[in-house]
Image (tube, rainbow, N blue to C red; front, side, top):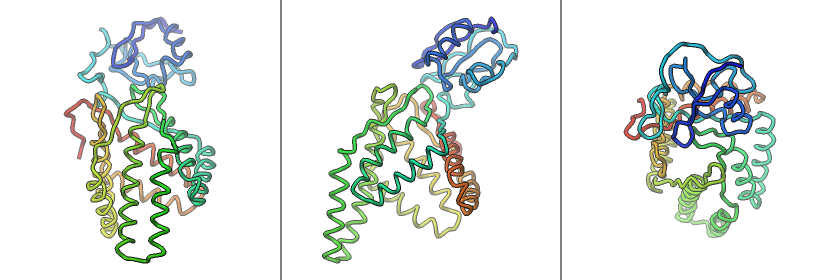
Length: 303
């Protein structure tokens, strides 16, 4: 146990200094988590507690690079120095492979059975959302209700059944449009029902249905370019992140089309062997999360 003093960030404010024994007590109680930003003399900048060897229960000894003075100042918007240009930091996601497999199988079966789909989908969201770590927003959760989805979902099923009896091409196109509307509505519902520490985040999605439809059509057409789809999907993700409203910081996707492309190719090849699919899925989602950052307002994502 060292005699170092530590600072940690909470709700955009610097807390401390605390002796290391007290900081470890805060870690034990869950006040300081693996994604909490911390700083101690000898560190070049603020870092997540989980990235510092020896600080969290499973690591080794903390670094001892000498740097005198107090902690780096907070940036405008709640970020901290030493963040590689994005003050709020990147998202992360992790989940157990076995749990992912059985939950995903239940989800697929529930969707195939049609009737239980809204309940199974919300159940799956209640599991996967807490697996995401957002800097400054601990204990992420999804608070949406299956009953909110029921009118849209069963209304769409009734429309599909009616169209199948009528057999009109015009109505078939209408069904396709309704499906896009449902995806867009679920996206808005998903963003609006995110919470941290059981408190609603007050987020909203401002992207229009027509823009969403346009991106969907472009994504389908881009498949014919063989590789151009990767750049289209990357741009689509940037559009999606830009339209998340209600945050103190901007949400940016900073991944590039080339990075997306080679990872997708590796994932496709590995998936041919069937067994690696869960690991490939987690690997791709971890990359996507790491490329989604909270940045100071006005920061531009790399091209």
